[in-house]
Length: 241
Ligand code: FPP
Image (cartoon, rainbow, N blue to C red):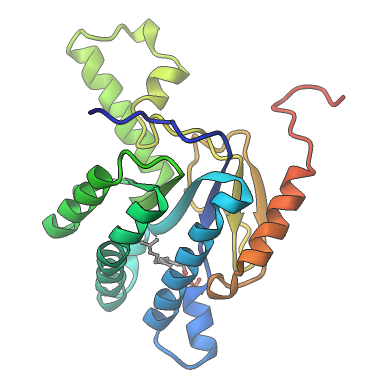
């Protein structure tokens, strides 16, 4: 049976740039990978908190197209951590009703990783309690470029007229097709950059920056940020009331 794309009861879509794992580890004199490991535990805790906090979609920035520039040891360590997390959490995802998806370019990832991603997406596709999206080898510009290429191919094939290209046509070719735009992006660790995350999708998104390093980001702080977000007035370009 084909899964529906956006079938979770409407809640917030929160996207998170989980920054500061390396600094958290360095502050303790530990290897950076220890920080990522602690960061993965934190990610699990934050994901688990989502349904009770009114969050129906959560998107986590786990590996950017720029992260390949890190040391081979860190890249391999991060990839194998991600693989371990998927395998270890598969049963819990089912039990908790979490649908897991990935965005980003899968082509450069190794075949085992790609198969694992496909497997967890397929086995969790009927789950509706929470939509978890992991951005893996993801870059906003890269995603828009791939969508533009797909549009160009359809035009060249004669299945799409150039005049028919509108926002919906482009959005339908993004990795996030079928997902709502994020309401809120949170970035930890005190950095105040967007870093190529969800560039198209965040046109009207609110941002929250916290100095807390990702491994120290608690569900309590998350809940406080959501409370603050809910008290903001979102205007989507309209005049204030
Ligand atoms: C940024 O901190 C963090 C990352 C690039 C990796 C985040 C990945 C995880 C927490 C694993 C999560 C796994 C799943 C499946 C969701 P940084 O290394 O840039 O920190 P720094 O800025 O202090 O160096």
